[in-house]
Image (cartoon, rainbow over all chains, first blue to last red):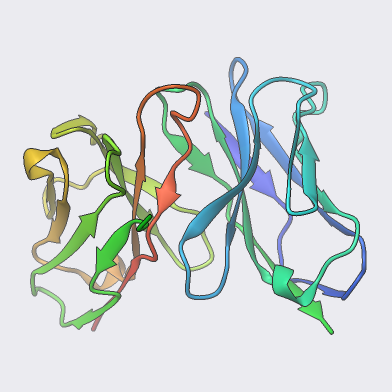
Length: 112
Length: 116
């Protein structure tokens, strides 16, 4: 079946460090891929998305590239801030009419 | 623009009691979703509405869970009777339901349910 696997947390980094959160997926066809972020006490927010192979989604300094050959959608940021501390969810949807399938989430802690 | 509103934010009940959650989606959003999020897990879809029609309720445990979306706007999710294993966060989301942003879902803050 369709699924998303992302690296387990928590991930703890110092401010200004480089961030990578790995995400791989299993799906038939060409799913759309997403990263959602959940800040403490808030609902999930769409961070970025990519709808076809080799697309790069980007927002707020974060980016992720849709890699069909490795079925991956790793999240990266060049210099993290304390305000980036949150839980990050990788997700996929097979089509515009299909549900979104989420990974388990990765908690990120950024130390000042 | 107001986001997705959910109430209550927190609910503590004893097992076998009924409980209901309410959701008001973003104005103009035709599609409404209810998700269940267990601790340390990602959200899992319970039910999806297109206007007032439930188009995907395959993951809704129908023996104890029910949902409605009268008039295609607000929605209520009910559990009766609640069990210990129902302790989780219940998330509501909405989307436009058309165009390129079809799957861009906007989430509410959730209702954290504790069943004692």
